[in-house]
Image (tube, rainbow, N blue to C red; front, side, top):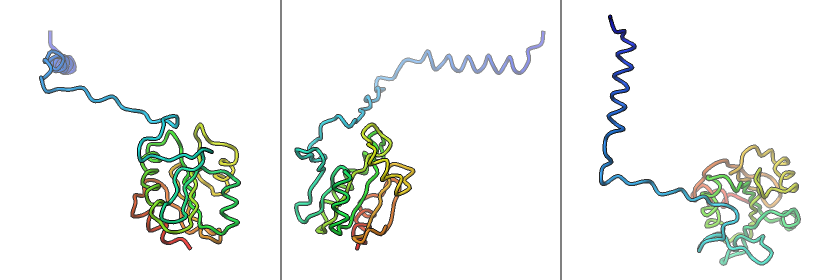
Length: 177
């Protein structure tokens, strides 16, 4: 009886796999730490978003008049009427890029001396309301973690998608008219 090459390869593979199963774990082997999942229900940590009594304000610039707050149609319309430069951050509470980018964005807003009004616009998440859906449609948003920078006359200065980092955010803030 002649053994086929496929049979031989199968037996060899099983033997090699079996060797890995029988090996005892090394004393230095450790299990990875469990992943922590951040949700919108998590209370803010030290240095995290500061939310005022009406639960809309995320941060206020102590050096100037820039603010970063949760989007409301009324606040957005007031900023437009007042001629403020506006930044819209389309954010999803399930998005790891958004979660990583928000503290960087918050820091840059807090360091500008300009009267910029920045809004976190919930996008395709559990917190999104009809006004936010409408705004996303107005600006043709197709991805969360999109930033729209609007000049004081309401024209779009630029838009960015994805991780930007502090330098890019700062450059875009400085470019607003």
